[in-house]
Length: 380
Length: 258
Ligand code: SF4
Image 1: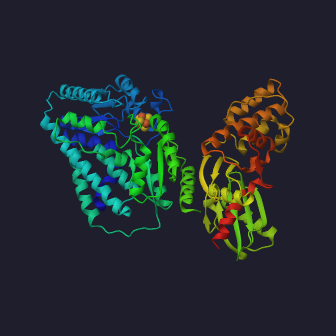
Image 2: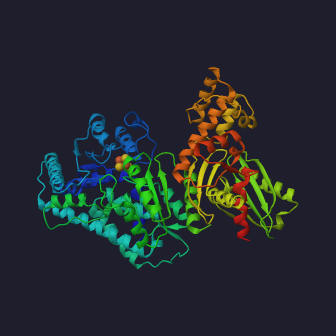
């Protein structure tokens, strides 16, 4: 178990180097998908390497010539990486431009300044008025598939697609198993390790990741841990599109809290819902995208309340509070949050919001907020 | 050994309160934090002990709070200033439900439940706008002593708007208002109102529930306190020594731990 965790920690310490090396080893082209909704199974089925684009750890420099400082961290970091040539190993890029206004900026910037050999813009629906949107999504995915076929010069058969979906489903199932064990023994992994495990799935080949997960799960199942009963169980929610600084996760734990489960994008949201393999593969991928849960503020879901889902997760895990993590300058989350907060107040839930910034981590201020939160829950 | 000490190490000032076994204040101390929080905390504790005629050996528990709470070497524990302000405020005014605390470099609004415990809070700790440091800069731009600023407010007879929240921009705005011939008193009132406008937003996030106490060094500025009270539509309760509310709360929690 420790060996796998060390390997994952090393891989996530340098995703650029890892993906560049992977491309060389496999002699395949790499396609970057901007988070959170691109069905990268289709890229995998085209015998390419799909990777979910990540937020780098460096301050934004040239990128600010193209995007304003009041864009979210991953937007600015990705543009900065791209225009500085740090993503030269990406042969292609895919964007879902209806996700948010900021994601809509990329195609123009990339086309002009980065010129990837392949670029695809998806218009996945943000509202679901019925079957018409399912048909629309399938048409979009068909166009996506065709564009990849033109790029590689090879047909993507339904068989190929089903095989890729199966591998992806397996990965989702294994990640779910990791979470299941963590729910039983939350002390087994540090929160940063859990984030690294999910994050590595986003840019490793799923086949390789599945091998690591299988070994990890064996170790996790065999390991006994001493329950830390005095720890306060909390559920972190949100942090759309990007990794949370690991220091913040450490801080949560250092302050006496423990995370038995989460509702983070680089967390349980990433692997939620399998793709049904019974019917047409593109229809099944469309159905996964159109699924209303977990509620995502970039998809206009009003029939299910995100707050209800978070509260359920909190109660199912005997947790005592919810920590909302909002990426600074993320309009979809910021717009949903007032409603989420009202729900927490109405239901009398201990809840706090912290803002996650790309460059300036005011860790001391976050510490005061989180420590106060612990004191509120603990009744000091 | 029933003596309890609360030390609040703020970015500008360090405050210490000593309580006896019956939770009566025996002494307190306020001094500048300077750049060496650890030294300031120990010096402030010693000052308060001296005033109370006590020795360190007489003390049962020392609890640190405030921005520099981690730097107090003699502390037995630490609790955030949010919790401590709430506890101090309810001790001074038992019916209080909202605390507006404006210190040297941050401001916060704290909601308190009927049981005297924190229900929610907001903090502004990312910029010095509307804090004690902001007032110091404005006083120097107006060439008045910081102590005179509060009284100056009441001599105002005209509304002058200081629109900028940022300390740096507000300073240049004040200088240009001065150059345009506006009276110092009117500008001082404009500054107080600019702080009040900022606080109103924070109070709105927590939800105003009476009674409301204002604490922190800026509460000593009667002009700012008046402007905030006017904006939120309620009279603010202010302790005789508003700077020690957090240290008092820390001392109360310390006494519970003996
Ligand atoms: S974090 Fe929010 S604003 Fe940024 S790309 Fe994702 S959805 Fe858009």
